[in-house]
Length: 244
Image (cartoon, rainbow, N blue to C red; front, side):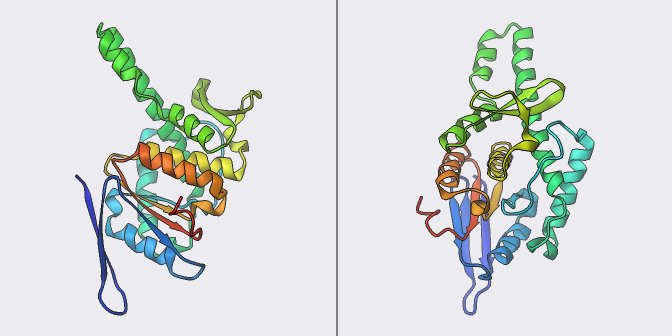
């Protein structure tokens, strides 16, 4: 089992703790208490296995389509990792659009990998294997379930030319670039967590900025349950969020 160890300097003895998959820690404090500095320190300790979700910063989509090639996606991820390791990342994020594009890439790639695996089993006349693979829901299916549980009335789907569109209460499909701030943040948080590698340490910074507690609480609860193979640290102003 993957284990993450931390040592935080204090005025006396260092605060040390460990996290394993399935566990979560909440960092609660007011503005200026040092939450962002602490989250940055936690990230730098395990940056190679860490996913940082800055839910309170600028989150927007330049389009509803896949804009990255596999090579550019890998390079962008490395650039983001380098930026997030920099001290400036505590307050500065100049790759917001790139992060959103990676979320779209991961969602579409997960759909494609699943579809190819099922098709390959059918081609090999392994119908039982195809049924087994099909029984595992794709991330977008799970996201739609979570959005419904969080009382967000939107449905996400993949369309021609690798576009991700949304509908609301049976509306005509429209670009995810047109989602509200809250809907966009919920989609990005869910997409990043559901497509993370097993064993990842996932840091979520102030998810309540664009999402009401009545939405973020059930969303995180169900995401934690879905990804009990990852460890989580959540930074928040909302003192009731850990209780939820």
